[in-house]
Length: 398
Ligand code: ADP
Image (cartoon, rainbow, N blue to C red; front, side, top):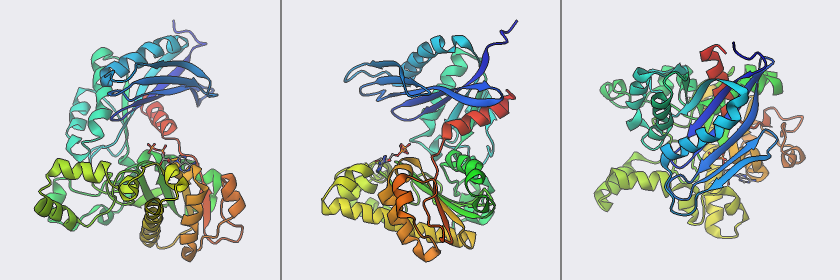
């Protein structure tokens, strides 16, 4: 007999190239409540584990020291060992995973079996720096615990409502049919924002909104009545805005020049565009916005100026895709925490009808536009983990 006092729980995993983040949600009174979260970082260099409860109090910590290579398998094993104790009071209903690419096949989250995993493996060339890491814990859990329900949720799915023309590159049809299309990313973040927007701004939720997801990776999404109609990211998460270490949009002719004149191959260009460009490349100092805003160096100022300028340009593009603008929403690390970047972006969007409320912006919002502003501006914290847990719960019928 199942213990009726035990709550169902959903574990959310977000596995990246050097870390695995986790969140444990309990289903209580029909709602999802975060009970515990944490991560193992530096899994190939100097692994550190930390888990905290919902109030932020430390539950467990461990550091392996410099040079220890836990890898994804070792990190997952430690995580499961920790969770075995935590989960004693729950019924684990399933695990929800963040997977960057669902290709054209998965427009919705999906329960994973060996066949689905094989299909997801085919998207590795579309996101070689993320997809293999996202799939590693799914594969390991399928082997260790074949009866445990697993659900894959995708960063691309939310953008499948884009009109066909917004998903198209001007290249021969054969390449389009082979999957060279604009997919868009950060979809779980945008979907979460779209889901809570009605609580903040009914007009924006029913109207035309541009959401700015400004983290280490950065993109913007145009929402029409809560559905994605365009985004700045494309075939890969390299397109669009300038990011921490990624270039964002670049004339494809530059790649040809790098190959012809610098003899660079695909891997060298990949390193340049993913890891050595963006805020880091332009400043030569840091990929961290905080460090650049605190620096007096002219190159740091140039990097921040270019970052804001690129947002201004893309804002115009997305407003054009929407045919007007009712609201903008800032989210993710920089969007949620940097009043300075928000103030600069709002000033650059004055021509679109955005008027900032300086004091509200300095306080962090949520509403950061002036009462008379034609276009409302908001700061809303994103919650991709909760979005993954909601999807997982729905797919599993918990
Ligand atoms: P990820 O995309 O890895 O999830 P985050 O959403 O956590 O990243 O965003 C990380 C970025 O947020 C970093 O560039 C960091 O400098 C920036 N950031 C965090 N807090 C602040 C702040 N108070 N001021 C400016 N930038 C900040």
